[in-house]
Image (cartoon, rainbow, N blue to C red):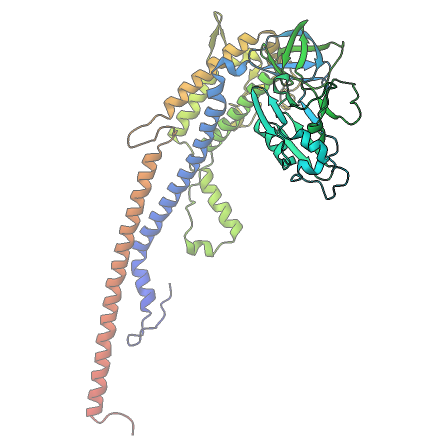
Length: 522
């Protein structure tokens, strides 16, 4: 490069000269940093691929090696507004008849309006006392009477006093587990059992109950209730109490009851939604062909994505002549050019990688292997699952699998759907084959990702420990090279500094001699 004359006394461009002198050592530093960058990119590429391999193993391979993963059932009902059904693993295939006789109910009391006695004024709220709700005469007859709340085995009792409040009544109800509230706007108490079913019903009684079943104490609080069955009308002035009841169904003529609307019977969970009277609802349970098909299809889809990515990485074009860019080199390029340059390098990092070759070959080997089912060796193609063939696909897609009849696959959608047919007609054969295939894959993948001292961690399909060690070594190498570069620069700066100093002294001495000899201007 052209030399600029900038030395104060020598007239030399010392900065440029030194940079030329140390350029060889600077190149060594740059090359070491580029090697480290490529190693980092390679680590990132392997980490990404490793995550996908582990996800494939845990999401599909691990689960599908167990026959329980295929015990998928589905149930259809003729009246979905009357009942919903969840199908369990142990549900038995077949058609059943169902009647919903009645739904489960909670006990629920809606009180009458609470009013103050004649001649007594003021608003009614939760703190209103008994002495304000009844006449003085009635109050004297009620003092000492007791109100009892009963729910299951729990009981709570309050003794009537002049200062007994609506809030006291609510607290007694809550002590036995009931929901209780006083609506100040409506002036009514609302009391209900926390759960449905006859076992969760409740009663409110009073010791002042008359022969006609009425209670002045309960009436004062608006809870002198009559138990009502469906369709009954409450007597005037009495509170309404809906009696709790169990749900009841008939399945194939057999009666079942539950304190909720949910019944778990022989692998099926029925949720009663509405009574059906004498109408029979048809409940049909069968093997969930679509569920098993979708699981196998999902497995193959994820396998295909993996094998295509690995083949693409392995068969990538060479990036010979491309190296990571230094900061100075990036400054001379546009952002798009930098991305394109680096992508070329990144795409080729695992080209012809031996470890990658081993993984892809092992996976392909398991998928191509035969499995014995009932004395017969079967392959994926026996289920209508095939590779596209050498001349029917791009190089990196030749090892992917296609399912005949798959509506989402333009290549094979027109073929007969053999897999779905076999799931319906020979489910045990399908389950046996794919569970064994998955077990072989699982074993092989565990083998490939086992721990190797100094090279890889457990669960890693690549030499993560070795690559980390190599990266740390490159870090030390770069620091060593940078130190040597600095020392080399310092050495030359010192030499040029000494030269400039010497020339300065010479110039000074020359000027002094000139002065002694009478030199200078006149």
